[in-house]
Length: 461
Image (cartoon, rainbow, N blue to C red; front, side, top):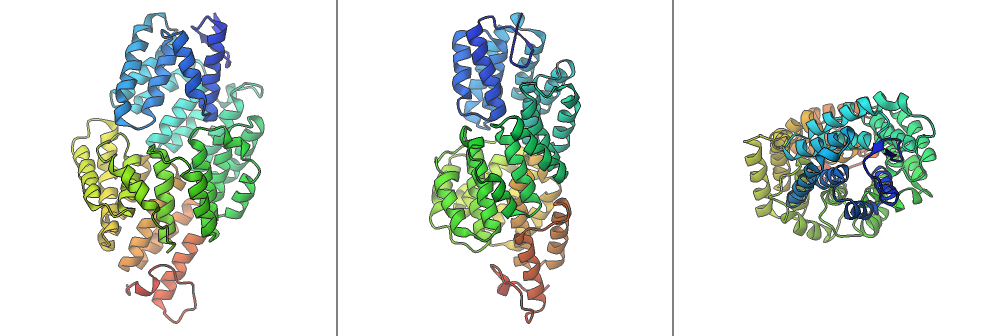
């Protein structure tokens, strides 16, 4: 029986095809741009490789695009046709694809955990569990999954560095910032192309309000993410956020144009980078020119998708930023309709936190800040269910805070700022410090403090 790069029995018998499959697995872990090419070579040579078909289907579903669902269904059909010749471990992946297509990605996670129970060193299963939990907003589950299999890995296991990268990110998302930084550095040292581990350390600097250290960390390490698929735009996004916190708007806009939006795709992950960055800039009173127009045009074409609430909320950002009221209303109505009939896990998240968050974003775009604050504040406690990271969801936190300031709800805003500081290990970034100063200035106009945005128009509480 042939074995793959991680020492798992594999039903592939041709050595050349097995090498391509190993490249697929490493590519998934490293977010490599060439992963799809390797998978294409595998399936061209071995279309009856059930595990390969399952990975094709799962990868497509993770793109969060409803029009690609038939591709995943075809992959499941082909995987099931080869089910009898698949090994027990490989069959679990096929079942995981079927579960997601049935609307239950949490069942997909459970099946990957079953794989890890019997084959704890299956690093591909670890990464799929990690990635699916990330989409579902399950940070504690990400951490528990990785820590369950950590003892099984030797230092020379080919997947060890990538496992550490996942551990670093899970530690950061659960508030263990010191351990996350150490583990992320170790991950990159062990696997120099582990962009996930590198970006976990960037998250630590974001959450602890240390933008200068974050820039120092990323500087000179571009090779660690140059090989990536569109994940490389996300790492550049992190660098742009650091410049923004330091007040370096010109650097932010330069990175936006040359890296973050280097390719004008409508991939929801790229859209989320772009829309959230432009909104942060606008909240700081920085003019972004006509950059919303390109995004709004793309987002207007995604209003009927409904694959992921995380994607929908960022499409809404693009529409609100571009002042596309008709398309905004259409997307909000669709989210509410999906949430009214939550037969899938995606629809359940449309209901909560989706509906409240969407209504809040719509009201924010209309300048109705009191209504916006009410809905956005209502969605805060469950917003993690939308998926993504703390850093990604922070744009909605900032909009909640700024809506509250513009509505004059200072005490409530202070409570949110305090909660935000607690989640960030007791530290504050320049954004939060500026908002506290704004409140102090509004309460006492004679206070000599930094005004920001609509400071002079904030009504008394």
